[in-house]
Length: 385
Image 1: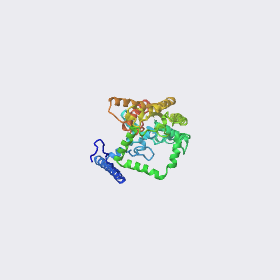
Image 2: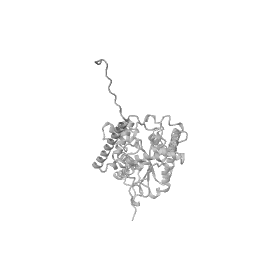
Image 3: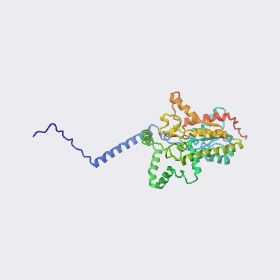
Image 4: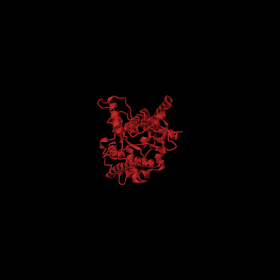
């Protein structure tokens, strides 16, 4: 019997047993682990300092709570005190690369040498500046106070106005989400996050892989930066999205108004003590240019109803305080870099749209030094023995 040539033979079916599938998965996992281990080993062998470079440096906090190195008290009198949140403290850079230290170097270079104290603190607000003025300013005999105003300070002020035990205004989606998250925050759910943080801090390969995966998820649109956050920088922009309710928008405006009242009160108190006040606005990275490199998380900046730098400038004008517009300065520098007129600098810490890197802090220090020089503040006089 001959076969019909017009009839195509069906290909044989291949049945994959579950045990074979699991074997393939385990082999893939083993290969991935081997690659990570090899990358980790190469990184440690090639440069033993790679891990510190990938992670934030130590805080270097002194006994009096200020950031920096201990110095004799006589060498800290009659200078500048810089107050702000983590952007002033200098998260992500060594203490001597934060803008207060850069300011001290710049003042020395222009012949206005005076000590600069870094009194920045994570989560600090204008209320801390008022407390510092009442309780500690006389201790250092400072003649200039610099306030670093950043978008996260708006959220800190709103949190203070809400009172203790509250993290979001009632009736907002964020408040409902926060309540649900709080109910689910049991110990075993914290373990994966704790493991992630530990591995991230103590390895070379994992942060690189984690960054690569996250950035590609943002690039592909799999992940998007939430615009309705009630903490951090995003809150200050009051983005025009449905999840930012009228209640939250009103709270943002209330926080700005409270900051302005605090600055007015602070300015009056400093005038009585014959201390100059200088305000500086610090931008978010996604606002300094339209370059994709500055907006890796695809923040929809066109939806921002408030521009913090512009709002801070208006506050400085109404309170008659000297103002340093770091936002405009960084925009100008970035424009030159995009045109190729200057070498490229990130200006911000890697994967961070809030904290300046060493170059960004250096620019801030130079601008502040030029402003303080125009205030005609006499350099401190060394105490007599």
